[in-house]
Image 1 (spheres, rainbow, N blue to C red):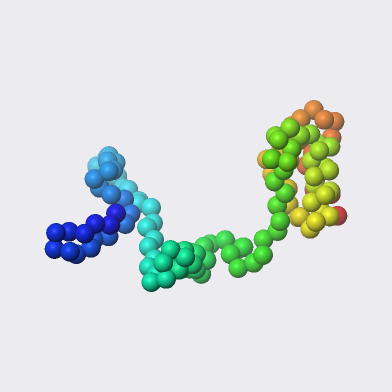
Image 2: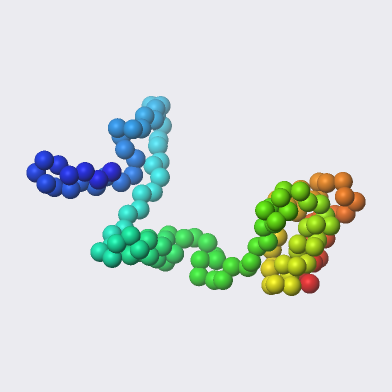
Length: 131
């Protein structure tokens, strides 16, 4: 929240606002508030966005992929309109593999494996992607 008081001073409050939060804590209990992060830029919203992303990328991200190119993931939900089986996943994975895709959506693989298609979707997809 940002506000200017009657004397012209600006006040910025980040994090949880005690006026809009009520969290009961039992005697001896604890409460851990979420992190609050703020950035400033004199270059407008674009500069602020770049500063924010740089802060997270260089100091807050714990992912091993932060500074590496990530493998391309096939997410076929819209292409198949949520209607697919092992054969469709195989064709999507084959086409993706030809374009350099290395991963397929885990939910897709699990759903295909659970279907009664007569094929093991997990093996089918992994075999194609790893070739």
